Image (tube, rainbow, N blue to C red):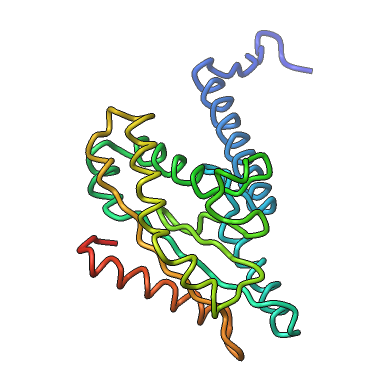
Length: 219
C-alpha cells in the first residue's frame, strides 16, 4: 500500500517512439517475407525478371543430362549467349529499367514456353532455356548430334537472334534508339566422352569470348 500523497505516475510511451517501433517491426516483417519469397523462387527454378529457368535449375538439369549421357542414353550440348554492348548501349545510356526491358524482350525471343507456337521457336520445346547471369543466357540442348547439329545450330543463329532483338526493341521501345545496336555472341559445345559439364560450359563460354573479340564488343 502506497503512502498517502505518494502516487505513482504510469509510464506512457511517447507516440513518436511507438511509431518508430511499429515501423521497425513492419520493416522486419517485410524483409522476412522478401527472403521467404526469394527462397521459394530459387526452389521453383524460375528467374524472377524473365520467367525463364534460373541458374540453379540450369545446373541441376545439366547434372541430370550428364548422368544420362554417361549411361549412353543421349548426348546433349550447351549454348551460351551474351548480349553485346549491353552495358554501354542500354544500362549506362538509359538506366537499369531499360536494361530490364531489353532482357525481358530477349528472354521472350529465346523462350520455348509451352504456349509458344512452333513457328516462333528458336529452340526446341525439349531444351532447357535459362538466364544464367546478368545478360548471359544458356540453353541445354537434348538429343544432340555433334556430327550434324553443331553446324546447323551455329550457322546464322547469332544473326537471326540479333535481328529479332533489334526489331523488337525498335517496335516496343522507340525511346531507346541506341539499344537497337546491341548484338548477340553465341557459343555451343557438346559434352564429350569423359568430360564434366563444366568442361563443355567453358568451351562454349570461350567461344562467346572469341566472338566478342572478333566483333570488338566488350563483355
